Image 1 (cartoon, one colour):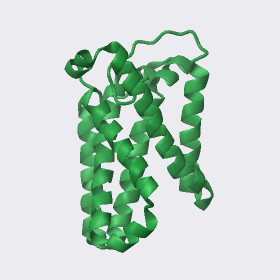
Image 2 (cartoon, rainbow, N blue to C red):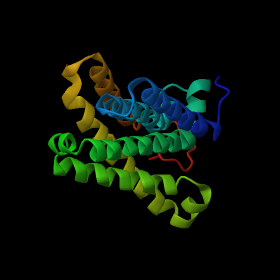
Image 3 (cartoon, rainbow, N blue to C red):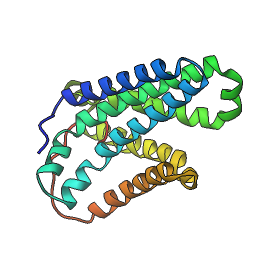
Image 4 (cartoon, rainbow, N blue to C red):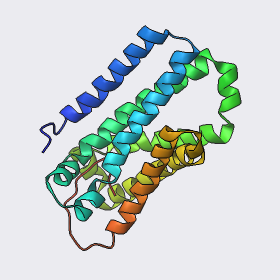
Length: 205
């Protein structure tokens, strides 16, 4: 069973992204290649944390055991780790827009920017309510509604990001399969009767 648990998971997520971006700058500088690497790396890291939180409850129902209990127990922290890494992705997007404005306008249609902006509003809302005090202030019903809508909206963002690009190569294909498989696992797990205890987390609902 993994020993890492609780808030140190968030620290590991932040440290990993910081080291990744520092290595990016050291090896590639601050030009277009570095920015594009940062965009890819932060998006893929965020996807890993998001899916871990997204499937935690379903995995615990489907495969009861020490590893899935750990996943469920730490879902809150995996979700916050997702928020940290996805905000790093937002910083990379801003760098792209500032330093490569023409390419940014050509590659990011207005509808994509709007959809992505809504996604980041959900990230911030879910992050803000992933703590006991703010979750209690919001109330169980509104908290559940917010997290249910939020995580499924974010899943849809990852779906339209990776699934249409699945034929581009093995990395895109693997990401697309994981995104689709994660929702399939959740849907299948809803048919199971095993109850699980859940707590506030970005990946909830």
